[in-house]
Image (cartoon, rainbow, N blue to C red):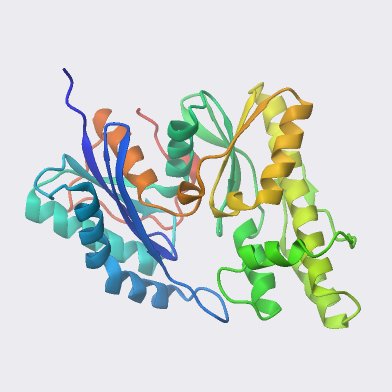
Length: 329
């Protein structure tokens, strides 16, 4: 009987520090702690400081919940790309320390690819188009020709950063997306905003500028602007996702990333999929947001395919793109 791999995963790309353990396909623990603010956005050095302060505690909680010791694990996976350099470095140093002390193989995992892999595992999709909607990254991804290829993406900022930026401008804290969603529920009054789809790509900064101007004019209710921002930008994402599905001939749409928790975005995806006789899948919220379980699972797939790194050779890659990852598994 084939031994089930026991993998430790560490997530550290942005505001969340997480540790998870997975045995085979069975999650044992998925613990995280996130940097937040009551006013203003994410400050990378402050987020890194948060990670440094909580890393030992999070590891201890994950080991306790899973009833596993570090001696038991087969490999260590750490998110080394893409992300904020100060945050990535905290996770990388922590992973290397454990790897060297316990003589365990180390594997660097691309955060974006991990969102896709954990979604596929937990929803049992076979060959989906991924609508990846996070803070810094917003992409439409699918596996074609031996790689995860990007069929469309933002030309400027991610949808999460777009929502957080507007939330910060109107005095809400970080993360702002959930607060904008709550305000949007108080309105059904759509205010026209720029609709910036350019081929298979889209742009969000012009919409953000327009929203700020409308807010400053004091002619519009804040909840109307929040509602309109969501309706406009989510329609853009769904349009490009549908176009990618048509282009690839795929019949499954999988959502990933923290903005994927937004119920309205999920509703719009479901409507589109129903209209084209396709299926929409959303994994649980705990793996839509940044988490270490996706790093552990993707690392275990890579380990099984023979991928290994040494602590000396592995480094962070803050700007690595999804389509730069060589898929060996």
